Length: 195
Image 1 (spheres, rainbow, N blue to C red):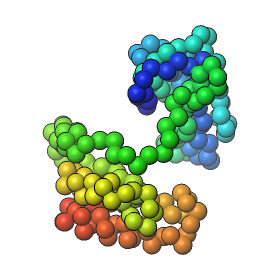
Image 2: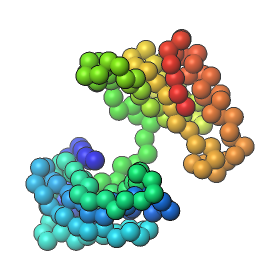
Image 3: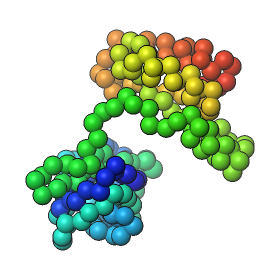
Image 4: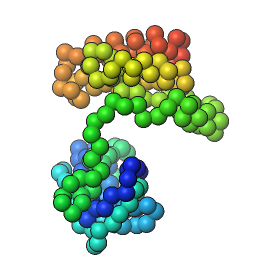
């Protein structure tokens, strides 16, 4: 995983949250690199909550990479890490990125990545996963942002994620999956979609 910052930041400690759930594999040894230089290698405990690691000295970087060095297998192959944090001298998390609805990739960038992936292996489908925010019901995107989704659909094969039950704890919103898929099908005009 790579975190790219707009400006270099100096941190004195790093932290992460391990996802712990019965059967999941656990990432139990990690390494952080700041601008290509290893700044921390640590054992990670198989426990919930923040695990914070002080650095031997403050480190300034614009790009932070996290590598998983060792995995404790579980019944399932999958596992995950949650939040990654980097704290400056005042204790501020300089890696914190507020939720945003600003589109992060242009249609040209996505098309370039799509074509490169397809040329490497034309037999496999390549899907771009969108948020469910294009649904007016959620009120998360303005009209200009919502209009960009059809542009993405023209560029690549798409799907979207929305989790009314275990993401929002709103079983009464289960209709959003069907309605969002229906809207995406209309946008896709015959191309495959997934939800």
